[in-house]
Image 1 (cartoon, one colour):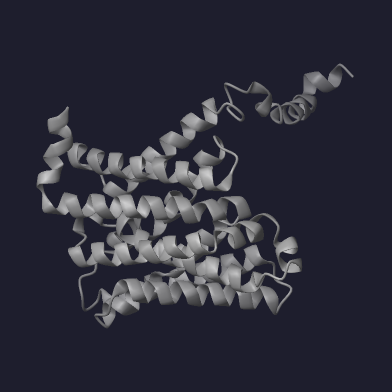
Image 2 (cartoon, one colour; image 1 turned 90 degrees about the vertical axis):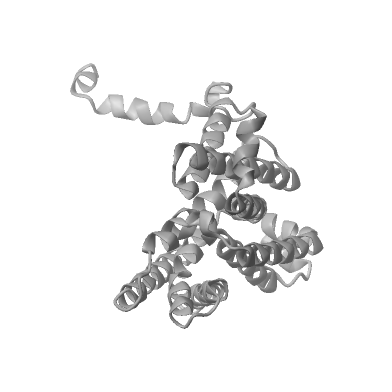
Length: 301
């Protein structure tokens, strides 16, 4: 058993990959908890898709793709806010417009670049954690440090704003600044996660650990801690599964994380489908109405 755990660690690429996977797992769980509580999962999806043009442009000019992705993510956030505040368009609609447009632009730019340079689109879409360099590790460490320090420093303010934005505004907190700051943290987390799971799957890593913890604990800080623990286990387990069974690493990480959610969904002490059967009673009225539409049920009336 010990040999199975130690064998992958003799390779330099696995050491780098595991370091990045652990850091990203912690980041996604902590920041994703805010997305869960504020019901902003679509925003995470919007920003993750919107980084594509930044990736493509940074690659074309041989710049740091982390910086390009971050700039594109921030621009998409600003555009969503502009459309939402300066028009009757709802925020979720603005997100759909912006992320689809940015994603389409990114795919178009990559297609143009591929005419002169060989670009593996799958690396952008699904990640390539096994190909991370030590410079990528350092970049991830820096991003993780920045995000964690900021959250620790303004945890109480973010918590107040997350659960009661109206009360936070009445108390004099800079709610617009807190909201934009949270968007920046989400963008940074997504940028750090691109190498692990790519643009397509990053939302799963952002939301799933937090959702799993949400079914098991009630306080935000415990949700972050438990979510981070589950996310780290998922990341490391996914990497080992990828190594031993020749699976794509990003999807393996996400599948392990989804497995944890499935177990929590079924067996959560408070919300489990099997351990708390009345939580499924919401289906009863729907089933009753469906039965009422059947011909033989209507004939009995």
